[in-house]
Image 1 (cartoon, one colour):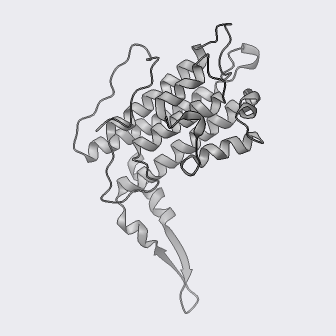
Image 2: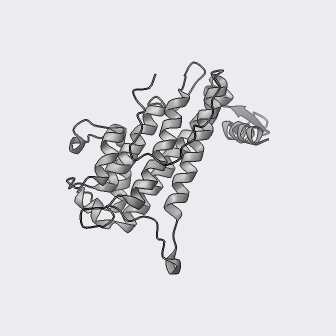
Image 3: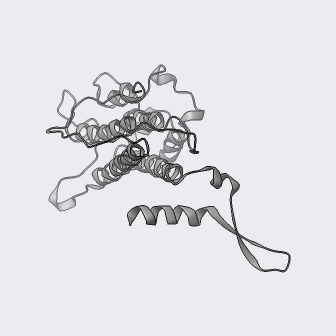
Length: 234
């Protein structure tokens, strides 16, 4: 039933209403939509939701850590988030050509003096970009790799763990996120990461089904402290 609801919603969004010569309304379908399978349309929506979720995390992290966007040279929090949104159109000299886990790990490195929020979210976003084969739209001949999506989901778990546990030599968290104080409890960061993780896991299962492969979530007794590779998977 959930699959049916998703496909129905995507179908409705592809339809537009126009007037015929006699002033009557008629529904039309975007020709581009006809080149997409149900899985392609789900992938389009899934990717957009994942990216928007990570940008929301970035905005929330900047609100709790305003010094970070200032360290990065942005004129405002909003400008810093927009730079992340346009990451594929911008240059990132501060990362020396590195992406994914290598950049995300900088957010928790004692020696790193740059914008830690940008480092973390840029790293996670480029993992997602790689998992979706650096495409924003998908068509019938496009293919995805379920393990890339799966590893991206696990890396969201790694990010949550690091945000709550990795500390400076002085014992302070590198980035403030969830607030565990009973008087002012706030777990919204963890919830948003959980939503993104669920979207990626769902997409991994859909892709595995389309590829005719058996796919089961690997059991993990503890979250790894290391970001898993994405780009290098075949």
